Amino acid sequence: MAKNYYSTLGITREATDEEISQAYRQLALRWHPSKKPDDPHTATHMFNELAEAYEVLSNDIFKSCYDMYGEYGLKEGVIDGKGGYTGGYRYRGNAEEIFEKFFGSPNPFYGGSDEATIAGSLFGAATRGMKQVKADPPQDLIVEVPCTLAELYLGCQKRVTYEKIELNNDRITTSKVLNTKNLEIRRGYSNQTIISFPGDGNESPHYPNSQLIFKIVELPHEAFQRKGNDLIYTAKIQLVDALMSDPIQITALDGRVLTLSFDEVVSLSTRKMIENEGMPVFKDNEYANDLKKFGLDKRSIEKGNLIVRFDIEFPQYIPEEKKRQLKLLLS
Image (cartoon, rainbow, N blue to C red; front, side, top):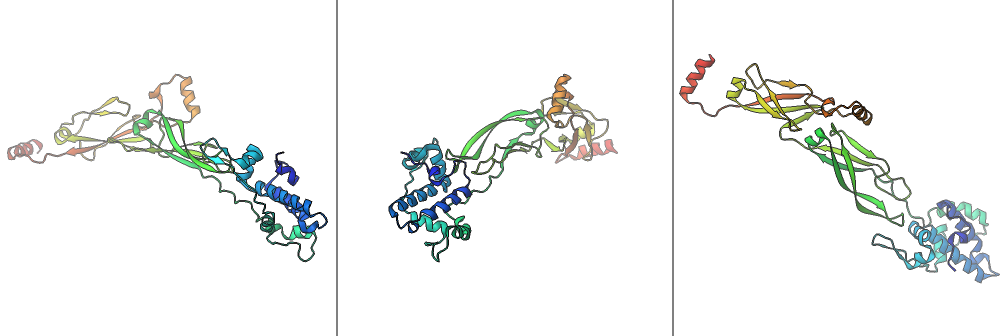
């Protein structure tokens, strides 16, 4: 018949670590062979049964395997479903060793103390018994999500793959596994944006799961710089174009071509602003739902401004004749 370690210690499967230790402490003192000189055979048998039960239930890995697979799975071992192998426990008949480690003394009865006194005086030593130190709480899992400026301007869907720590089937040991999650990158997200999923992060025995946090990382753009909700565009033009105040064209992040005209000569200090052509201003879901209710399109969403500055390329060489002409023209 399979052994029931909980019944041996007189506890339920819901017993806490302290209750497991307390049950072993009381019963081991009662059934120690030195306390039963009139029936040493029964005492030795019970003393070993108690030691084996405590050795299993005070060890997180053994206890988890026993709870899931019973005595057979614990002692014969089972495949854990992740390519690993758990179990293979064997009781070595070392009841006295377990007793000594638990109480911190090979003979707690020395001096004639009764069981209640021994249990009280050795409480601190007993709590240092065979119980494993619990793992640390799991740290939040932070995953960086690189996004181009165009993706943050238009919004997109991203499938993100990341590595997290998960509990194995024994619910004690852990492994690193790859997970994926589909993310909605909404218009106007920035480097300050985080997307959190409470309880979807790393796992650790005895603690709630941590948070899974996706952190947006904005990638640099070759033409635009972002300042808050504004976009800065540097237009590279020739000196002649600056003097002639020729219109320039700017390709926006959504592919539209914007034409900017001037009524004055363009200099390095010239700045132009096009209202409502910057980055979309991110709003929460309630705001987005309101837009849909009123049938507003993408261009109706509030945006920052587009600020245009200029990088004027001067010619490396001007012939003398042209210089005289320029001097007459500009004087």
